[in-house]
Image (cartoon, rainbow, N blue to C red; front, side):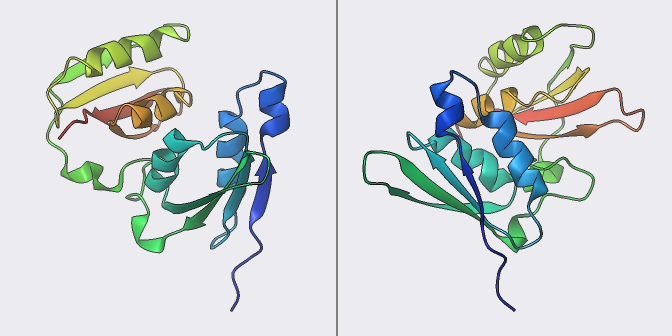
Length: 173
């Protein structure tokens, strides 16, 4: 059986308009059928996205295009899937993390305040320690920031569907 044709997403027009393409990239990744790769075209090498997609179970291969753009193909890797019940992008090893040392209840705060508070807090934590946060929504723009800074995360919505629970493991080990 052959792998499905990769889904191609060119974010250069979005970036040229000054728009943030992260949500479109995550939506494309969520829409992939099992075994399908995502071929991303960007004006730069999107290094922070490599960790985000690795946490979702994708390996990255990239090449520079003539004219300076980049093509990155994210190919699914079966053994990298997160634990059942965790949101896509969650660190698969989260069930092995130590108990949280801090808890932040950020419900009721408007963006970007939850993201700012989480980033400020996690930067003061010892490498390997874990932060637990409660939020009103899934913090999509926080995830690439965490990856860029070397932190891992795992999260999901509570059964009520209104509260997002997030574990963040401080990087730097």
